Image (cartoon, rainbow over all chains, first blue to last red; front, top):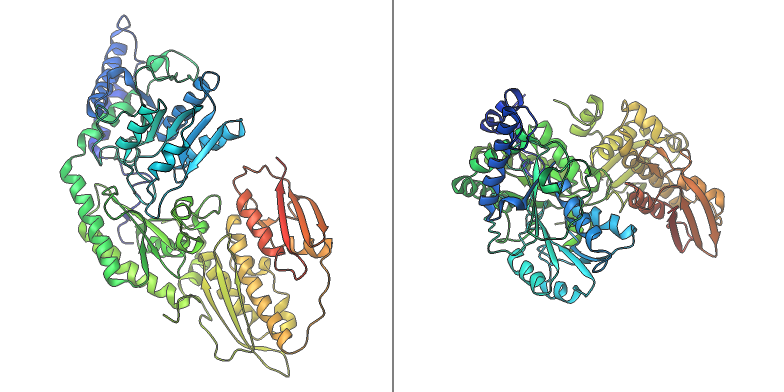
Length: 388
Length: 211
């Protein structure tokens, strides 16, 4: 079999060997619980490693040390942000929450879960590129609005929102603002000294770090209820034994990303879309042309179905994903493609390509050669698009 | 390497049989599913004397399960009489393929429906069919047997998730014994509507869930 060319880095990434090397010591040598400064020496060393990682990440974001809470990943971080604020504020301020309709599942389904418990949720529209309407956002904020949650970039189409502007609007109206930065973190700059967001979700699994490790930035004095009960870890905001190897690996993974790499991701992505548009007819690019993360491309190949494309590509050694209903765990077409005004047909033939550290420009050329053949074959057997 | 389908399904997916169109077909039909998005067209050439299907072709705008089923049922139908071909079930097609994932049953049912619709089209064109019968509970129930429960790969009637059916002045009310936030609630609602709404005397289908 040919080698596997993995282009689903938004879903999970191959861990970098150097990340694993940084973690090993905390599995086999410094495996103790992080103790207080009066604990035994193994525990003190574990705590120092935890502090060091937390310090690294808070500096990286322009945040304070106490504002970084480690979690099990972006799903937990977003749940904690939304449900934590909701529980804290429902008696004091109100039960109204605003999210965009193309948020990733942790945010969308947390909002839906609160809706079933009597909260009111406004789902903001997005335009054809996936950008939220800032006027609609301003008009939607009410006296009883407790939280606005709008992603930094979209998980499927890669559109980047102007979170600095949104955060400032929320700040001026005295409403808390959460952003899911899972797909932008380290890929585009985030300076929390400049962006007045109150809560920010991030994860290690999208940046060649360990799975099951993430963090939530919680700005000082943000009202948030603790919902994972147990001990007093993470400034008494999230109980549970600290995942020391995980957070050490998380910090290392951040450290390994650099501007040169991000430029190369963009170069591969641009090369891919340029060739697809030039060489395959009846293709639509999904998302925004400029306002997008460097590692994401999303295209609809009209008249063919996404699962058929991904399976053919899989048999040829490529891993990609699709927004087709046939591919999803709920048999529903992508709510993102539908949200940007697409129909079932546009979601049906949509394919997402997300690049990572271990891809090369040669992979991209090889991929496009194969997509051309696959799409051509499938169009031959499709009843659609024959008269064009 | 591990693929989501068995070798036989993959073989039919990679090299589907009987693909394409027939010029001047004796019977043809296109069945589509907005819920899944799949679509299949079936074309028939029928011997007017013996009613044997002499040639059959299909086109698919669908997933692997749909393409593979289209390939195998056109193989199975070729050389059979219309009456025999009508009786091919999706269970038989699935068996012939060595099994399909439960969640994919509805895509393969669509292929069977395409075949049956093409036969019906032939019968209508050649005056073999049939007056319009009013929609009864039994008619609705039979149609619901073509809606798959993606949890099991069996239909919603067999898996006992249809709690109530009511017909009132062109409106069909169906209560499904699943919570409205169930993983497959939207998908099942769409499929039920799609199977019942085409009935000639049905104006609207209202699908409710238990909570």
